Length: 81
Image 1 (cartoon, rainbow, N blue to C red):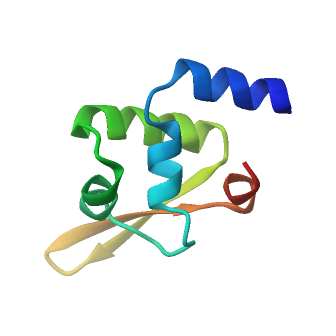
Image 2: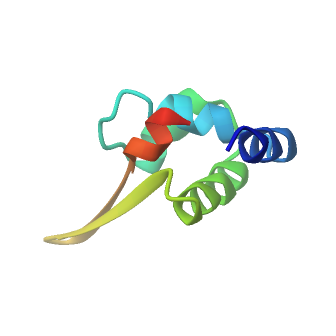
């Protein structure tokens, strides 16, 4: 697992920034993540997709009247990462 972590961190700029933004375990919107991650929106989008594929972050979509709310939350694996 250590080498996998090094590979992920070494290759992907911003992985740790996004994980740190989600580190408190609370659900956050893209805007909330971007306010603390200090990365471009494109980079945040890519890293969120990668983190979801690695099961380090989960995405929740909630239909609300007149809009859709999308939030992200760090998983237990993400906390251990």
